[in-house]
Image 1 (spheres, rainbow, N blue to C red):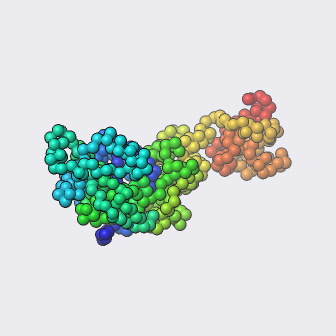
Image 2 (cartoon, one colour):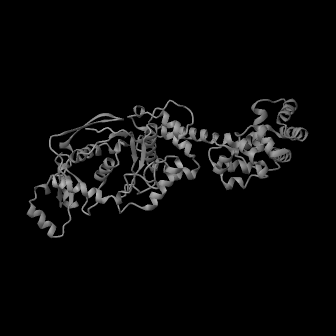
Image 3 (cartoon, rainbow, N blue to C red):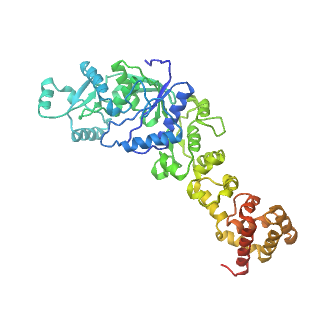
Length: 478
């Protein structure tokens, strides 16, 4: 029976064994959006009971990445809360209390089976066409047999006794009604031989102790949920609402992984992606949001709806991510743009040209590296192009660049006057008029408006580059 709370409380509970990726970030974002939307509390909890793999370095990186993304928590690391500590490695006394209760009520039992014995049993079951379940060998041990094994120095894991013949049912807020049979589950480990709590147990206990009302997590956890519900029921603890998010897949339909590209938040940040872009993309990945605009966290929360979460796999779409990146770049103020571009770009642009440069290139860049390319085009003397651009210049012919240089000499950076003059003297228009000019001046077939390019380059540099283009057409320069 699900117990209702007055305050919505959600959580994100990563294991600090690696960097946060898009799938983790999306689960965290959805949980934070839902809590904010309902004037609730979003919790960050560090599930670090796997001492061999957990590393404090990953905790620091996680905190930094989430703060950078703009997903903030009301309880957890760096924030005081009433249900701490928020590191599971510090909550072992809490877990022991519930182990003791389950042991007294005979809901758990010690298991001395070795990994080799368990592997052999699984292999035998599979060969017989049976589901691989623990066969309850150790459940049959007498007190004397248990004492004998303990006296021999053997350290048991503890298994939860799954009741026979029960149906475990719950309504998933994403996937709808779910039904599981206890006979298909098998007795599972709730305490490791070293005394620590595995994910299934401590995750459930902490959700109850921290009064979590809604758990949004990946659908790869769906089969864990009936096991955790059995723990809740055995301990008479409230069961949260569960919602299992569809996995993010690549174009090949396989779960998103490193082979599809680099998708950790820190790698995306280092590439130059803006947090607003990633947040807006993730908010719509597997979630039908009608709002088409670039939104901040508060407005994304206003449009977030659990019922609009998709049951189908969410396909990662680079084109869509880049759309939001471009939108986010356009939304930057000049000060924000320069902070994002960084010193490598700023050092290329004279102080008196920085405002004009930003206004000129903003619509034509996606990453700081793009701006660096444009800075070199505008503020270095020479410019290089590709084979296609060279062909355009050759096809334009010597006379084109003679007339172009004379028009610039006459009208300077007044590009409208320059083009009008060239149109009269050359008798060309459209692409044949402006494309050779664009390529001669920038080396690129696309980019900012020619008028803006002219203003940034200035008369002398325009004439210099037109002169170089003339030499290419005449064979004087290769």
